[in-house]
Image (tube, rainbow, N blue to C red; front, side):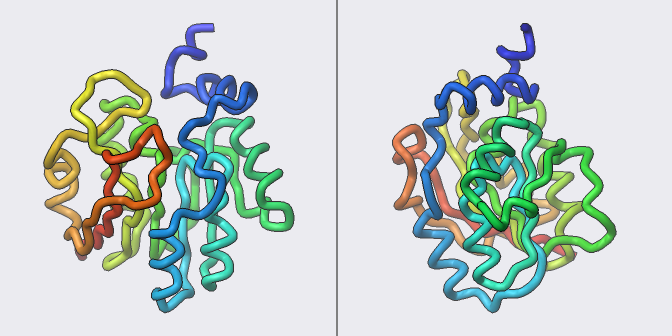
Length: 198
């Protein structure tokens, strides 16, 4: 099928999850997120788009957040259900761009290997959707993959590209080199925190 070669289609990711071709899967919670949550006040709502196996759900839950994870790949959602056990009900099968999350906005949206999974044409839509789903002052936190190469996935960001996409609606509050990247992202990921402007 053509969709098995199109990373904007669920079938593309279904094949990879079913065959175990998931080099982006860290197998657990990254150190940066664990440290962030340890220092956070806790509480509020958190969203994990393109969640894959969704290991981070438990970390957010333990830190006191009401957490929702979403993926449009049935095979990814099945992997999350296996990984999460009693928390599997937090995972939704659906399209991040279309899903109705309700009227209450999120305090945190966590990014890990979702933006770089999307073909580049989706980047403005991603930024607009994140803005719409976050409350004023809410945070987009996580790992952002920077790589000048044209092929993908993963589709890397160019230098300054994310800043250009977000600068009208977000303020960069933290930026450091990622220390716990999996090999496919090693040396090219940054841990960043972006605060949504009013």
